[in-house]
Length: 558
Image (cartoon, rainbow, N blue to C red; front, side):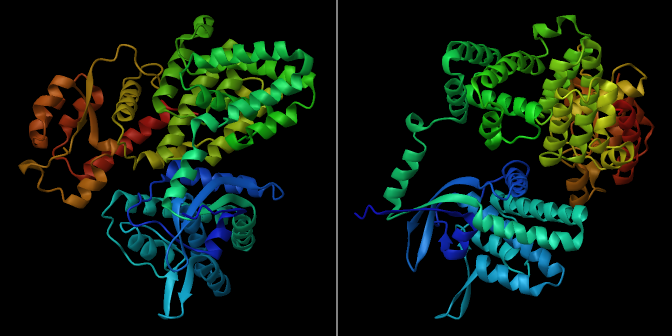
């Protein structure tokens, strides 16, 4: 058995340029999600490219030698496929703007190679049997061919590619065509020269497996958290005992939130760095800590601040934390709502507010954060815009530029969603997560009744079900709804209502006229109002949703 291992640090796009790459036929399919891994990659590259002298490390890719000069991908498919999508999307942008020299350059370098023997154009990257045809026809080819999405991976490929296309459109929107031309060219250079991977080429699949296991061996892996801790301890010198005490106290406070030690500590460290230094990705935590700790006195100073912040971090994730005993009850209710949303980008800002604002301003600011979070969720905004915006606000609080809720509102004008945009998005809102739909409707109900604090989760909320007025199974009473309209409007919030659980079980998929008898007697105002509608159709869903959108602006005010 040939045990030769080839090792090279190289730009990820350069790997694609120099080689014919193939995912083995039976290896798993494409699996990256557009709102997490894909957007994170785009944001990381865009952020890193602002510092052109700093390389960006994308990890290790393990390849094995196959037939006909092919390199088979043992580990790294998702990164290579997504990078290829980025290059294809850039190619498509140049094509749309008539720059065919750039189109030809990108295709020749990164997307295709020519098999001279068969006079055939071959993709530089070939995915597995399930994904390759869809990937080639919808991403790689200049002229796209409509393909039916028969697998989950096809949907993920489509979503990832659309997300990348939208990202590039936003670059053009922000910078204009001429500047975007240069920006995208810079992206190509960066992916080729600075977005580095460690390329390992081994002789066969057995060696690839052994290499993969070694790289992921828990016994040999040092975490980012350990690296940060070791650096701080080393710099502390003869104050090591003090440093160890502060670190232990910090760790104990954060660990009260969850058992996932490294993950939660890393989230905390990133949030703290955002406060101290401005926008920080997880990959930049070590660098930011090093910059702030040139001496043992600075090391102890930073660790003291981290220890103080850790207690507030535990508090912003736990509405029952003792810190809130002397605060207005609205603080606990705000944290309950934010926990329900599952948003994490807001944490650096919440942490800064909890640490540096007084009790009154903490309560009023947290209440605003609930409204901001809902508005961002309704528009489907996550990732870069929020990370950068919230980090700037958190850093401004740390620096003393923002001292209270009034200052915070003024400084947030650049990122928050205005009423007109929020209302327009709410008019077409689909909600597929039941707990969020119940929260939205319960809050809108509170506003409709002119009651106080509609944005909070009611503490005495009875057991309620989410009623789909147009049901998930269309019986005889729903023949006027076609399948296309059903797919579009089934999860629209205008098609949703609240019902007590027992009543919801009884009406099932009955006709609208039969359901109205139950709606009439509902204790929920927005549900009982359905009785006044003659028939339920697409127009009624849209009309009701416009009414709910008007209420939404009042429910989650700026």
